[in-house]
Image 1 (cartoon, one colour):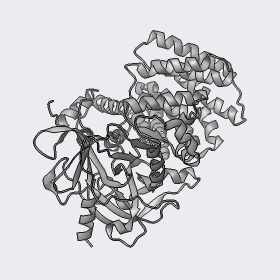
Image 2: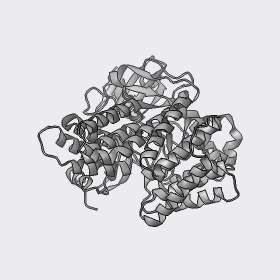
Image 3: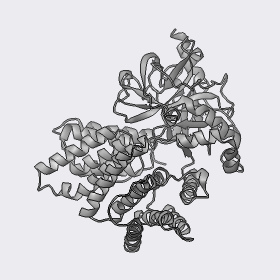
Image 4: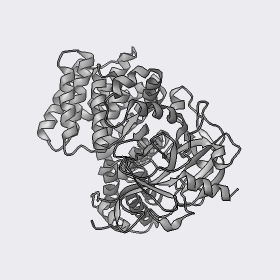
Length: 550
């Protein structure tokens, strides 16, 4: 396999191609594109930036979209398409206020430039994103006023420019309102569902290369199962879901978009597979585990499993990916794993709590993450005073706490992937003290030794990718190698963007390493050549480094 350069990957992205490149190389390519935009007078075609951001969207690299879109916005102002893609990225990263600011700015520029046809074309998507912001605010807060506002936003655009995409969102939101005992004037829900079903079915026949009509038909059938129960609606919803998942145009972005709708608005929980939304959620869960080799669960689902041990046996007995005992241990570690955001709530990475005594500190708990996530000296890292940490399990218990960093206790810059010669320094770690910690957090156990690499030795990564929910990477999780200095571990465990700073666990669910990066062509720790691997910095090497810095 030919090794690509960051410039070659950047050029491919600008052609709307997604090359076979490692995640760090894609990140480097995104930085290269952003740096090209820094000189305001330098000519960079807007179509190149639109293409790069869109292909990154398809592969759920919202942080890279945010980087490139912000670089364009700050140096060249508001382009209709780039502004929409940037707003979409910050919504996915959890910064809803910033998304509204971007959409408001776009509307003002559109009003001032009525002959800019790009803004006219983008108007429907802008309106849809406004609805999405309010929908997500409802999901986070449970306040029905946001649900009403979301319906108004989608419905306003639906009247102006009918489409099955807008129609199915109005259908889902109005059904949710009805569940809360609130009826809005308008077309009866059953009639609306039939209209969406008819238009989406027609679109599926007319445009067989587009996967979205298939998802919409499935969701319309799901709605009809709720609104006008019949013996076949759920079976039809399943059938069209399988067609959607099997479509060649369905990628991770499309899967997560519909899965999120099933989870958040239709309340689909894989643990409730006797209900239609739960049946669909179970299909999604199995598909993601098989194709993306990960299991994600929101805080409420984790809490429910913790409160109802019988459901562990019911849902995970016989599961090949992991055992019931694994799930129990995953539930125990989850309160200690947090999501790092900036002041505006944009997700930047993951981190975890361990007892301060691990590093010879008197503090009860300290927070560990990558230096490329939190650092005052590493380029593009988040300065510690701007960093915020949230813990999903804490939020599920009704505590909407955001924890600030009080002090950085130790930091070490990143080294190159697979570079054994960097030992003992360049650990890509920041250890900091938070001003507060969750009530239920006790800190993760740190292993006294690294495991011996072998085909039977497994390691597991748990973190907060940019989708937001806690993600457990458990399949294909072989520990490949450890460097002679016991500084680096290589493992096959799959991870998503946003997993930087995640804890790496051994089979006893003790932390053995801090997840750092990965590559499809990672230099081997012993001998020549490369292989597909992720890399972690061992906790032992971090402990040694902090001990010498006391």
